Length: 356
Ligand code: NAD
Ligand code: TDX
Image (cartoon, helix red, strand yellow):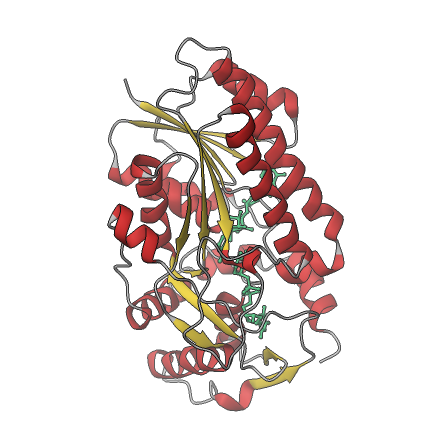
């Protein structure tokens, strides 16, 4: 019997990469992909599997109890992989309530549906799993002056933005369904992802898109905030491994010890684009220091020892290769970039950056 996955948020950045990865890797899978198609979800990300009968797309909200319960009734779901979320920190600072609704209530709704459906079936929780895709941001912020200090799975939660607070709350609900009802769960907490299909509100695609158009490159604050970058495919492989081999109830941090400050990221992109496009107008003078993000976390750094030791995961793509590949992808997908940056994106961009 083929395995059936309920993937939520599978038209977003990481979710669509995961769907494509799984369909490519396993012949015998069925993926029910539920996505509300917010501004961040794009069905075009799944064009290459449009005719694949193993992939069933449904536009729906994870907060909709009737729809989610019906999906559990109609399909014998083996795995839930919950990517669906509001994911952008800057937006969470403006509208926290949207984040509480989708990230917290949506997750609780999925948990309830899994518990009720699986609990009342003959197989119950056997060979099933609910995997919550979470983030290193739930651990808060690390200082810059102690580079050997990393987030471990045991690090206390200390979310500092409405986004990370909503993700931490969701994580705790997931854990509680494991502890209270015995729901088979895992939680993964990954560092910053980059790669194809990332919406250009996030640092890397935003800088690529602006640089190509010779627009100012907004760097928040002093540009010295550090993020730990992982190529999206390495994240997808880690999730697959946790689904297959992760011990029930465990949390796994995912990261490749690849820390860079924002200014370094921006300069790397500028250099690569200048070279590839032979365009001398793309240079560091485009960099524009803008007002800092409120409550801006200084540094994230993941200790991935547990997933490496227990599951044998390691990152396959170096940052040097991954960033070149990512830039090449954006340059060869102008249509995609054009379609996602028209309309609502322009409004968002001018609201966010209009003062600069
Ligand atoms: P994204 O914003 O690109 O995609 C989110 C997807 O969820 C979109 O397709 C959107 O339409 C969908 N969605 C939003 N609200 C929904 C709802 N109510 N019902 C159904 N679908 C809904 O985000 P992403 O960067 O791909 O992140 C995916 C997940 O991974 C999130 O849970 C995020 O917290 C987590 N994560 C992201 C990163 C990162 O660097 N991007 C790192 C670690 C963890
Ligand atoms: O224009 C910008 N200028 C800038 O300096 C933008 C958009 C960002 N930044 C800075 C802020 C951060 O220090 O770059 C860094 C990265 O910012 P984002 O791309 O917004 O990512 P971040 O806030 O680190 O969160 C990301 O990683 C963890 C994802 O958006 C989250 O969903 C994930 O959980």
